[in-house]
Length: 271
Image 1: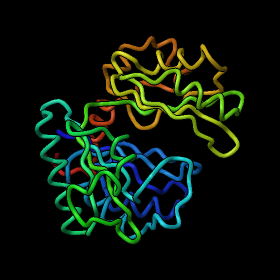
Image 2: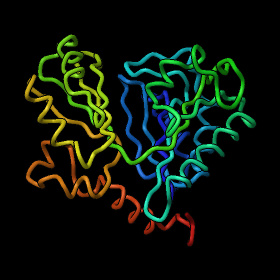
Image 3: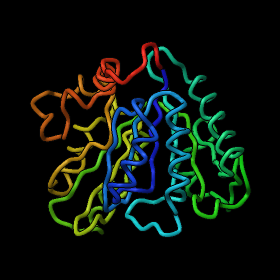
Image 4: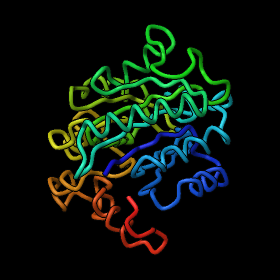
């Protein structure tokens, strides 16, 4: 089974988000939205749901009118495929490449690949300058921009909101905690400030470790999990800290897959 964590440049309109959810159906495990980032993170399974969500987003959204705290270059900004139990890295790469060819051929979207070739930050830095799209036209789609399509291991997206909204301090802390296992940005989010992280090796540096790393520099107002965590990451985190870290037993990939299997609207045998 493959997971696909689609990042869309929409986090404000309830009616648009409802229409996008209708397009996806029961293969959605989780949706996390933020009006300040103007972004939504959709945890999906399989290859059909990411395509349905992409088509709906291209029809409904316009990156040219988008404003938000998070970096983006498209309405369907990031589409990473992740191998879950029973699948391999090769399966994720094959799904990535199929999606990129489909998005280019069917929707005219320029797609930049990331994974073994390069990282997502490298794509963001080089898109349309030092990097040409791997599939699709050589210029951005007029309303949908471009897509970064990846194959990657499981990661955890995790935000730490500072008690004192000092953006310079947040950026400084983000620089301090960056490592091969942690990508971090200091962002202004409305009237607040956060250190926004991707934990790319979450069994080595998980939510507890990054929380404590930031807390050594600045007081933290609250933690925020974006999306879901692998079961092993939750199991490695002391239960006594779950509330502080914005974790719980129902925010794991395994818990949502089990709930999906029990849904009455899911066809028997569907993947």
